[in-house]
Image 1 (cartoon, rainbow, N blue to C red):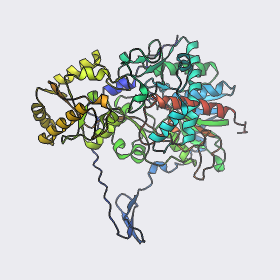
Image 2: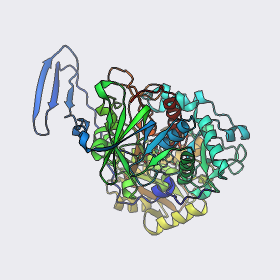
Image 3: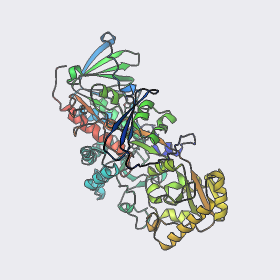
Image 4: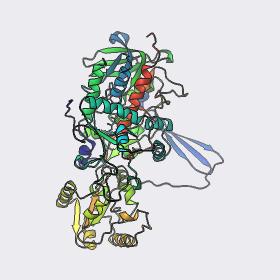
Length: 589
Ligand SMILES: Cc1cc2nc3c(=O)[nH]c(=O)nc-3n(C[C@H](O)[C@H](O)[C@H](O)COP(=O)(O)OP(=O)(O)OC[C@H]3O[C@@H](n4cnc5c(N)ncnc54)[C@H](O)[C@@H]3O)c2cc1C
């Protein structure tokens, strides 16, 4: 049995985000002007010099565009001088980055009998969380569960606002089950069990799907009826269904070593070599003692270097403004964070980074806000269908946009939560963990308690002075009226989630705008074989990319329709790139 102590789970980490986390209030005002006929183009040449060009055209709007200075990180650095390269080594495949996708690529390729070196800048592989999605794995088949890939592809394309490259989404959807089976087989050989689960916000109440529909769910619960659908596709590995990606990766590392993969830790790739804009031939890497080594590839190079969350300049340039102001969770918790090395090395030799703004995985733990209770802004007004925003992903985004959210509920809340059914991060029953948290929040003032709505309003105003008490009272009155009617005429919330606020004591939970991002998700433009292309759409020969380096997978938000999608995409693209690269023709280096 392989053992591993890595227990950094997304749940435990996010649950402990403190008030030190930065938030941002976005007040977006879009104005439109009819009939002015001038287009102004503002070119910012440096931070202090601005040149304004004016052009008169027969168009009906005024547009002011700012062309930012090209950031310095995009300029290729000089090559490493030949005399500083102390050693040259040759392999069929050179893989950079021993995270989820790099280890998958290494094992998948080595199984084809090719020689592989896997270089990693840290002292060990990177493992986080533990949720791994897959469509129609062998566990699904055993339980008689079928998830229609076409339905999921359609959903992911819609959620991305059609920014995703459907070829990549299809590649994932139709291969994730096969790749999951490959992982399950590998783990079972090591005595490690695979679980199909519905993730809960605490590992304690994670829902193990041992029969379908799950017997612990409230009567009539059906995941298909959720406003934000979450498919039952999440797999975990271990003695118990606790998030433990480290265990899974240690099995891959062991398998890679047994297949003869040369794993070199504390070796950081710094340049790709692509003579005369032809085939990418080698990776130059720096070892712990500062020496440079040239790793030549007889067949291909795979970049699996992850994201760029640790590179603030890239974060600020590529992420949407409200995400870029957030901290990277890994920095807060002292975990190693990739710095976009793969993105940049590939860009410098002609690959294209997908257009801005990029997606980021943004999470925040918003306590009672994960249940679809009445929610209002700081002025006292309802602003959205609370079921939609109660998703862990949408909540922080909405919260940042409107500058904080009040969540309102009454003494019947334990009864209401029970009807919700399980969901990612969702409070869905008044379990002992939730009740304890609730009590703690009352004690430390994060949840305000009162016996009348007036008293509650007075207390809330002390926290958010902008609250208009009369407006607030009308909001609660109107909401209770809609609950009685059973129809949400204002925001269309499903009727079984219309929980009135009419039984004392009443509660209000203030959620300031705070969140963090876990990884950035923008990558390189690739073809359907995971080969990056240049600005003319031509393949860059001798190069593949995987995981978070694969561009055009998402819109702006990382979707949770299949919890653990990011790992699943890393496994699947790693496996496919490994197999593809191993089949590349041998070339004389
Ligand atoms: C706390 C946390 C919890 C998470 N939980 C989940 C979850 O449960 N489910 C899920 O789907 N996703 C989760 N994620 C996201 C997920 O971990 C990543 O999206 C995924 O691991 C990406 O895989 P990857 O192979 O692209 O990159 P990584 O796994 O990040 O691997 C990249 C590797 O490349 C190495 N590297 C970088 N640059 C170089 C260089 N120049 N030379 C050599 N090596 C280099 C890095 O050190 C790293 O080891 C979580 C993220 C965090 C931060």
